[in-house]
Length: 611
Ligand code: M6R
Image (tube, rainbow, N blue to C red; front, side, top):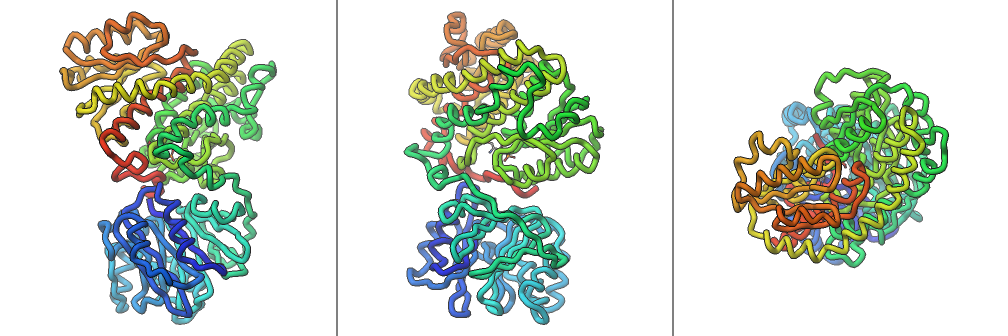
């Protein structure tokens, strides 16, 4: 996904811009570029591929203390030098970088061409530079940018520099995140705080419809009506170390191994009340909506990808323990569907990034229809977090690997806490909430135990390394884990995998089974254990190989499975928190053994901020 960095201050801009782009690499991109102003002249460099390629092109002595830079993830026009940002006006005196999608770019482009503008790229973004060029003839840079963005339909996070006013950067936002890092006599602009943390821990978030005029020693934010807005400076608690690999080969492995800690963080200070308070305990972020929560009759969970699978587990929990009818919808479907909801419906958005375009649009749709909107979000201060009425931060820290791992287990931990809140408001006994919360506190230690099996898991991967397809099967709470396990192996190792509920296998997918098409069964000793065993028999009878995830001490399984990974026993509703761990490790080792870039799988972006 595209990334923006900008710098204005007393230091040389290039090293800061390059460092920022490197920090944004995790978002996924296909080309990179930057422009710097020095002594009234603008120089620009672009490169297809990695930021390191761009760096090689830039001369060591490139001076200039103002600049903008960009990593591009192609939407309009293929990855190429000409489509790479920054884009320029005809006179090359206005340079812009843009995140988002301009929906009316075609129409604007035609109008601008009629006026004599010449376009160099296939992108939607380039229209912004030409629009500003049109307006700047009779206006200041800021006024020209305001007039230009008012013409745009769609989403933008945009940063602009110009020869006409060489001591300024103008940034504007609508639907694509922009953050301004406030340093000492310098400002660092970025689409995401990862590019800022190294320089300052003080940031200002720009809201939709706001525009900032930034010079070395001044920052002024207004809305598009030019009224001054005073956005507060927020303190970041993400340090640079937190964004590094911490001794692991990949971010993904580091993040898998961080899960005992990240789950503890998600639970810290939150489980105690369910163990000790007999009277309707709640969570800090939900206090303001306690009364509304008591009245809700239906829940709709909206999310995408891994966050969607967390939602599916939430559905099982909310219905079983809180008795609230729950549906889970892909946000991309919800936003265009006529869902029936009103003020007795709670719509819960689950998102690691808090910036996923489909989930954000779905939240807005739910709000318009009068539903109570809630968020389970990781990134503090992100757009979805700010647009929902109440919610809980999952506190898993920055997740850099494109594949979601620790964010998922923190989402699950939070959903369990919400089940306790909603359950206690209804029919759940204090004894039950206490039992669940006490067992929940033991989960991090159980995860540590599984992580010690990584060598054993690596051996299994070696054995199956030539496999081209996998069927992942599970039931009830572990059906969504089968889906998540299959997604993980697909995105990280490019092995085709399908997740199914075990009981559904005989209705079609079993036709695929032969000796080269193995099945992975999640089969803990829970309420549907025996049913899962029958599914395993059916695969075995057809010569299919089986890897089983089973409860420690289960001897029966040895006769049915070719390979077994044991996981510790826990309550049925909590098993997903531990059964997902071996599946993350399997996907990781498959990817590594196949020599793939596990942190940045092809075609994927960490934060999907376009539709
Ligand atoms: O940031 P979000 O949780 O809203 O992202 C949703 C999906 O794009 C995300 O979970 C994606 O499926 C993961 N990269 C999968 O590992």
